[in-house]
Length: 103
Image (cartoon, rainbow, N blue to C red; front, side, top):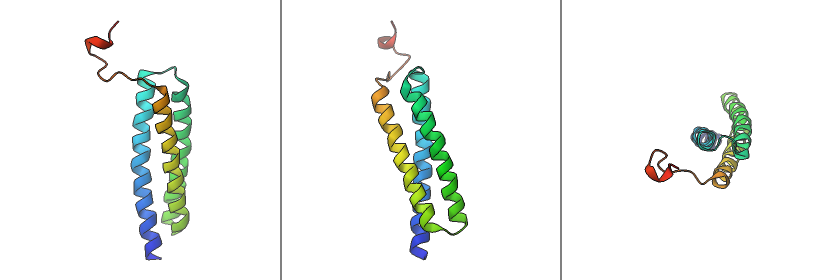
């Protein structure tokens, strides 16, 4: 039981970090490429991942540690999808204000 609790906590913490990172990635896509299809897909994935994370957290509070851990892993899998959208949406300007990026 203690091992399940530890694993669930580890996965929840990791999923939370990935979720926050995913939010930043989607924001960057929206800022630099607002009309990109990847921005729309990224927002949808982020919304779904957030709901799953909330369910995982509730499962942890209700001591359903296996469910909490597996839901957290699902959140991390969705965040990998956001990474893929980021990679396909580019290129992004490294320094948007620099002279080389101005027409």
